[in-house]
Amino acid sequence: MAGRGTGQKTETKEVILNEENIERKRFLLSLVFPLFFIILLWVIKIIEITDNLDLVYYGIYPRKVKGLIGILTSPLVHGNENLNHIIDNSIPLFFLSLAVFYFYNKVAYRVFFMIYFFTGLAVWIFARSSYHIGASGLIYGLGSFLFFSGVIRQNINLLAISLLVVFLYGSMVWGIFPHNVNVSWEAHFFGALTGFILSFTYRKEGPQTKKPEWEVESEEDEEGEEDE
Image (cartoon, rainbow, N blue to C red; front, side, top):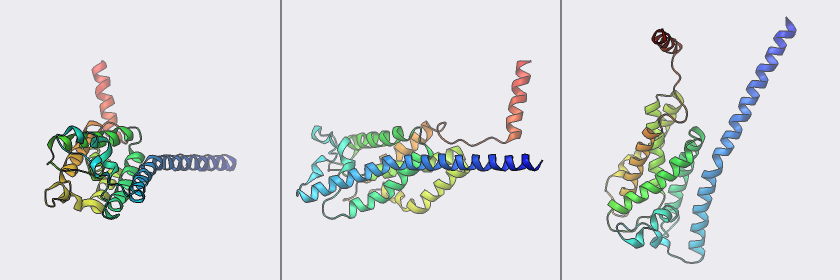
């Protein structure tokens, strides 16, 4: 009996260690793309500063052919008056993208690049005539996706992430309104809208809420009665 109990404890420890290793690898893999993207932003910024370049013209200019390139390049460009713009964007972008890649790893790339592309396209179509630059549209999109995904799925862990997003970035909601001519509120608005749409589109992907046992048993009983 003692030998059997010891064996069970050993197996339990091995299972726990295996799960911890899996989670550690999952977390490390989730770091790769967010880190790469942030490093890319800073490399571009450093090149811009050292070579005395002005990359604002790679931003989105709505309804102009010359502004179409900005759909691809505008999130990579930040204001060159100081480093505040890129610093303010780098921190939330890193943590929000990390959360998406960790909790929604199967659809993370799709979500990231759909927010990237559709936000830029909407800005090009609807925004005011001015150059729109920066990754803030991405930030709003990822934050919106995380928040509404947690609400829609009613998953305790994801709801905790949603509440954390609100706690840390709740003030972001004011950014979707036109209150500062130097800020692209349109990118914020369309990013948040895209994130919401994607949270609904991919509501069946990623972590799901487990149904109570009594509800599962009830469904199985109903299926059995239908078969009869």
